[in-house]
Length: 133
Image (tube, rainbow, N blue to C red; front, side, top):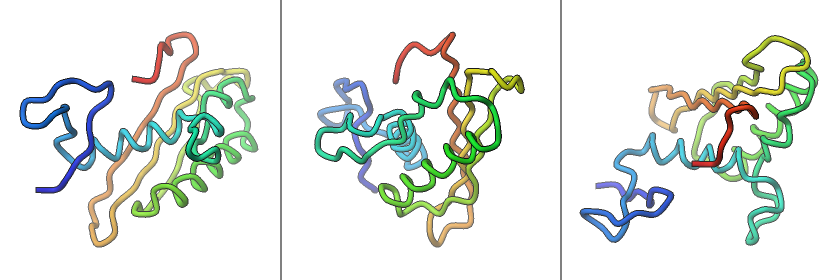
């Protein structure tokens, strides 16, 4: 049985000390969300860790902004999650308005030696965003 990490927020588990993720896809989704939501400098042990996606919420919805976000995500994944083969990263606003302040991120990925492509998606809307978990 593969080893999976604890779920956050931490809760007492039935089999182990804490509840754990029961499949690899859930664990990777947590890692990706954590990587995207953590701002550079926020992780004390590694000040370079994190995309800081919230800082991009009020950027204009134009190609250069979306490309910069995609580039930052790609760079962070290659450094901190090199075990993923990323097929594509799509960044868009949920509203096509240039002044839209919402973001949608889709990351298509697979694992080496596994042809099954998986997708991670994160929607950020400052009007409804209430927290990390």
